Image 1: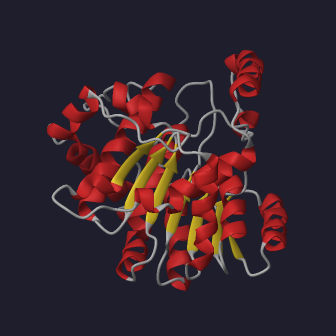
Image 2 (image 1 turned 45 degrees about the horizontal axis):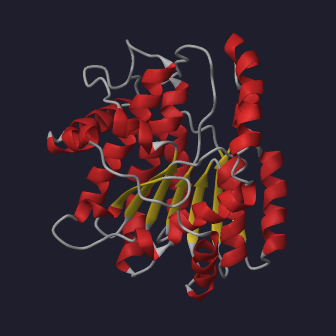
Length: 324
């Protein structure tokens, strides 16, 4: 476990860096918001992009972040990012204004206790938010992340989900999109494992950027407020009890996620294995131990299969304007 004192010392040192540009997808609530607060508190003149749906909440957050640090510049992009076409529009707005991005921080997602909920683009909404949306943001903003790396500045992607599931379970490679085999368990397995594998491939191909898949621990983010289905009525009180027993407090969660997003402990590594720029983290900053299943998937080159599928989804939806 990384001591909270070490986390705070690392975060405080960020004041010596040039102004950072950070994009928070899902930054109007929960861990994204907690982390944006700490970024504003610990840096000089950051430019923070918040991507989300709620204009009212965003306006309050903008005022809050500027109160924390008056030199903070905050831009809100209102988009429903469960649709990849909206992801592209958000990224185009950022690319029109910035020459580089230092941090892409993604927490978008929601709890649901019902079955497959297909979007107009042919993807399940939950799975889209937990995987395809995040990979599309990366693919669109990677040139700006590379520009930050070229200037010897921070260049990092953080996806907050759960890397542990993908280290233990194997996705169904004959139905990666879960078009025919959707279940909540399969969705969790695919989102986790496909993120792990994609981050490994992206780190290998973009050696100046590091990619962090972080498990958040139990944090009261409000993510369950929109939960639907009969099971939600039973699950909510159970989740409340678990949070109270095992909760990471919002302020500490923000501090630890800023550490994951900026610490030199997770900088990309040069050398024979360029994919050491991919990190799977526990909530406390510890790097998760590799597993036989995770290692086997990489040895079989499954990261290439996952990314080929991902690019096929992007082609059909984004390039061709169709439906997957």
